[in-house]
Amino acid sequence: MGRFYNWKCAIIASAGSCLYGYDSAIIASTLAQPGFNEYFTPTAKVAGAIGSSYYGGVIVGLLVVRFLADTYSRKYTLLFGGTLGLIGAIFQVAAREIGLFFAGRVLAGVSSGIMLTTVSIYQSEIAPPAVRGRMVAFQNMALCVAGLLASLVGFAGNFATNLSVQWRVPIAIQIVPAVAMISGVFFLPFSPRWLIMKGRNEEAKVVLQRLHDDNSDHMFWEREYLQISAQLALEMEEYRKEPWFHLLTNKSELKRTFLAICAMTSTQTSGATTVQVFQSVFYGGLGFSSRKTLAMAIVFQICLLAGGILNISTIDWFGRKLLFLTGLGVMTVLLAMFAAFSDRFAATGANGIAWGNAGVAMVMIFIFVFGTTYLSTPYAYAAEVLPTKIRSLGLSIALFVGMGITVCFTQTAPIALSKIGWKFDLVFISCNVFFFLIFLVMCPETKGLSLEEINKKFGEVVVVELNEESQDDKGALSTEEKRSVNYESLAQPPILTTPRHYESVDEV
Image (cartoon, rainbow, N blue to C red; front, side):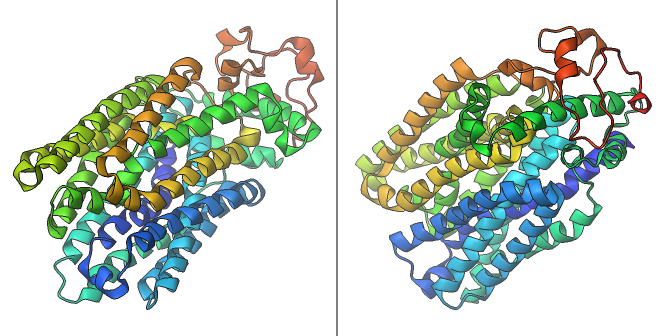
């Protein structure tokens, strides 16, 4: 059952990614719809506020998700996020005044902040090490599919003769993934790591067996249970000794949190999010009509999806670090070319249509490269680089910082594009160069390792290795260290109080 059941859970959890993907993408076509602009007549500042209010809601979601995910489980946090997404969608569809529309965007943002964090945590904690990158990447591919659907629906809505239908119906479709998440969550198991954190070890064994009982290795899930239990016992002992902010005083965990922040922030500062939200402004500046702008948004999402499919197949093959460096390097070059083409178009006006088309080509190549190298990589890396005891806290901090920067960009982008045009791209170019250097110097590779074994990359101990031959690696605990671990937090007897090797879970 293992691998099939694991992917079944991944597909159900992807409804949360679809909700975030559709809601974040539909606003691009909404802002380009004549019906929406005629109804609300938004100024550049209001348009920026519509974008930033959503990401402001995302930040609120990130502030509460750590408490929800650790206290009530990853599973029920997904249920709560889906419910908020449903309410937010209803508010946006029913809006008669801009205030209610803003309220709906904020609620949708809170939902997305919860989904963005919890889906990544949940998926990383139920996936086996060999395909963890692909399973996390699958969530972001679902996000891309939802984004493509949003662009297609937005384009179709432009042909509606009823101006209200132009934008209300496309927004209403986000109700579908919200309902799918709410109903599907009851078929998901609890995260086995969360169960062990709560002392519910017998339930964790059942879940791990269902998820990871591979036909080629029936003992894998048992060894995995031993590793997770022992590692969490050590981590939770440290966690109880100090307050939660020990994250900022422990050198290893500070570095891991910093890398998670860099991974998520570099996604937002790459330029991809700003281009996605304000495509209509970019293309309008190149002389495109509103309908052609909506058509280009579809091409944009197709390029992103194509890149995302490649990302699934490359993330566990090439590793995270190589994809980071390749993506940032190539995107920097493409942004520089886009800026140059936009400058030439601005200088030549209507006679420079070729420069405008070249600029659009750079945007499409840019987003394809982003999808191939960067769409899922930061989410996978940020979730796995953090230890289990602070994963929800650390990831919410990383996303909080990243989304805070996104709020600044989405609020200022319409104004900056109208005032300085292509020069705004220089901000993204500078950020990409900065993060390229950070990842080149500080980023350890994590592919193929279990979440517990990644501790060794940061100089921390690994209590149990999944492979017997690696038991004596320097990252493993010595016999005396094993004896010193306090296992009272677990609902099981001590699992490593003697140095002998366990053959099965029944011996624990």
